[in-house]
Amino acid sequence: MAEPNPGLPTDPSLDAQMDLASASILVVDDHVQNLELLQAYLEDVGCRVRTAGDGVEAMAELELEPPDLLILDVMMPRMSGFQVCRQLKSNPKTRDIPVVMVTALSDVGDVERAVECGADDFLTKPVHKLELVTRAKSLLRYRLLKKQFDALSREPRRPG
Image 1 (cartoon, rainbow, N blue to C red):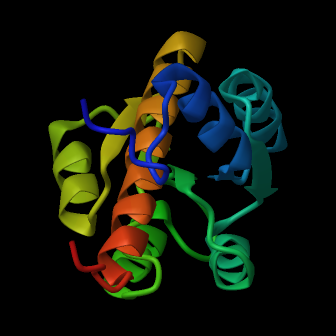
Image 2: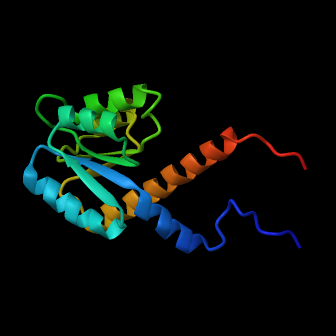
């Protein structure tokens, strides 16, 4: 019988919980009430949640400390969510960060535009807690697994 690989988790459910605790989410919305509500909903994810009040603040936060997930309002002054998403996805340092666009807009054209900008998911307001938390956990697990994979692929191969 093969020995377990010391670099891989032995208990997937425990490891996933530990990984999520080390993750961070950046929530961006120009309405304080929306920020507070989304932040409260995301407490159930079990990771650190930071906030920004608009797209310009979001870009500064992304430069300072890239999050593992970005929850992004679409309609904001100074810089829209579409613009933030497009810039994030065009930068090699941040392009792998999953983006969930959140908006009161429900036109199919808005969803298409979000996808064209590089959004990974799309939620309409009012956001339902279960839907937000479920999608956030899923995208965070994907992000953390991708980071682990990238780290392992950079390690030199050992013979034998």
